[in-house]
Image: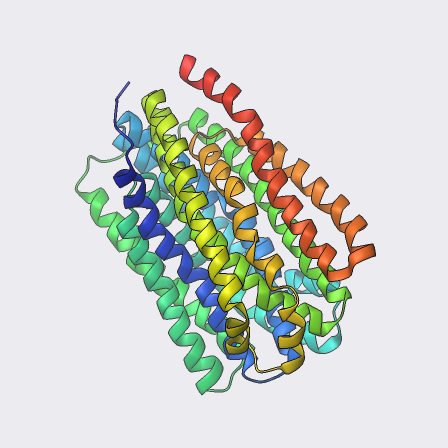
Length: 438
């Protein structure tokens, strides 16, 4: 057992940099939507939203390369096992390269699937197809960036993670504006901006990690290819993959149902989903703190640190969710007006601002519990509770959208978030007792 103390300062030293880092991702989404929104065409906005959902459906399924790596590295860090930290990183990189190449080659098929799944009109489908085909070229770089970030966060190096995310998304924003708006490439320019950002970030990130590894003892080949460790990583990653796929399936169903209400409603929901993403990434900084500290506590077999991490990340998460909700309620209409010039989309989105704003509150527990369960590598419970939450979402969607239309769709999203959080919370005490009793 390697005791360490979890304080507000420790939590904030991870959460604040990573909150800033994660906020660059939805802000990137806002910029992309704003760039395409300047063309005043609801179909282009809908195509961008649909394309982003297809992309996220694919890549968030591989989010285990970030979250699984973080949990395993954090536990090795808690045990003070530098060699295993390296081994986890290189195993994740091998999976990232193999999967990324397959995804890039499969872009036409994935785009065809997306067009079938969304069932949108021809103009929306054409814009989505263009976006997906270009953006999937960045697949190997994107997945390698997941592995790099997972390693960095597993060691609690949030400032470095912040720098890498700022680099990735900063380059992406600059290229999206330059190519999408100034060069007039529209949706294609936004997609190429993503490719450029991912490439530059992976070059810089790998250079930093490799320089660090050169100053450490050489990793034995036998440890890198340890069969038991690989099996554990694959089992963990498989559970996280199912969890991530289920999560994205819920959001894909949300977008698809919005498309059935018409192109204007689809575009309005796309604008408002940026509110949810901003709130979510705002909370994700504290989820990351829970992830690293819970994993480190499990690796060190030190229950007091685990309990302190639970308490402090919950307090800070709820406090900041109130702030986020208030900001969205007060400034929501102004943000909508900046994002799109299409008046019909502005009017449609205005009616649903409260639904989007309160997702920050209903999602607090879901984000925190995800962080704890990923860090502790209690992946089976996380997988099972996510499947339960998806079933609750589908049931709500079928019942509520029939009677309440788009209001019912947003209510179903809140049901999904609440079930995720409380179902994991119900399992946590038993898992903690079993883990720290060993």
